[in-house]
Length: 511
Image (cartoon, rainbow, N blue to C red; front, side):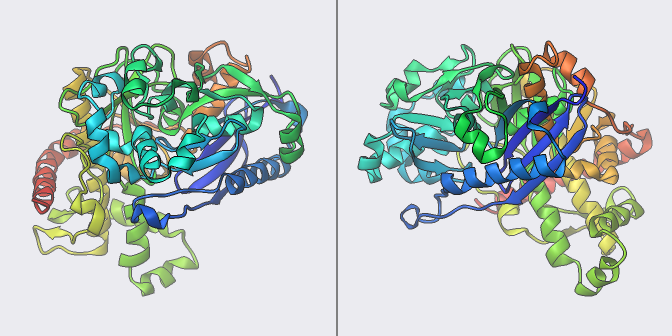
């Protein structure tokens, strides 16, 4: 075990990463690069696509770069796996040539929503745990059937993005439950492709790959890939998982009632369940967990990380940026400012991006997430410190609201919140979250939670650890737990109610 390394490839919405860990969970090398998508004109701005050739070249480069930076011997790599953004798919022909590749941002299915509605039945939400259907793979395939029939006729394989990475590494077509559950073609109870849904959408079942449990070997690195990446031929290629679920296990959420927020560009919140409980009102989603015989229920708080980036770049004055740029990290300054403002931000409330997930009315565009509306002032105490404090409280209240909705649906309570992702580096945000929710907040030292969770899958699949419980216990090191202050929690009760009222008013702007 000493000196062995685990490689995790993470194809995220905004960047691609290669992280190399040792078997105790230490991040020993890391490489990443931003990437972007094209918008086909025939999709009227709703479609997004990417080049598989460019993505694979980038992945191969990042693997080589990370191994070089970390001085990693290919002989010491015991396994490799992939995780990725959810809902993204790749369509291939019978020779394995990519016909189409689209990220989670590709919502061209909305353009054929009327066709989708003719084929879908309401009980499909009970089978898949997801809604609305126009966001997922079948709707995109119907778009191709209607708009590019020649391409559609060539489809022989459908893979989720992380499945495609494993295919490129090993030549094996495969999937795993967490990613497959994001396709709207998967039965989350039987953990198999749904014959009923596949038949209804008139999709050939032959295009769907075999499903392997996360943390199992699906193939080996091929000779060609060895030449391209520097990996050793025959290195085990192991089923990973969807990005959020991988981050969830990296936050130690394995058992029923454990809950975690993956606080990054967007912030999904998931609770672990021992049975697949589906929201009858269709507000939130249910999916599969990486852990065998476990499921997740999910809300999403929306674009928290993007809001903070926007605030940093466009709201803070140029003179402030110049004053701090030579001496401090600007995010450190924002965190300090937030800590210097009092709880409640002197009456300032923000509605900037974060949302309470609700698909009961199908696809809804939230004004707060779209146009960054102005802060609502309930006092005259306007200052930069209060503004950033109000934004952080806005984030915490959104996590709380989505968590409460999951408790309402599942009837399962939690006593600790786990947080990972880039925003978990902000101790003041974590403290505000603890005080708002009234529960302790835990965060692992490794903030690259998605990559660490994928590496945990590798460790299990490579036989470094016999199961996920053992791997998590051995590979996660915790930062300081932040406990709530009772007095501040009581003060936040009123602030939270004010925020929910503001949120409701923002939603009413679209009516």
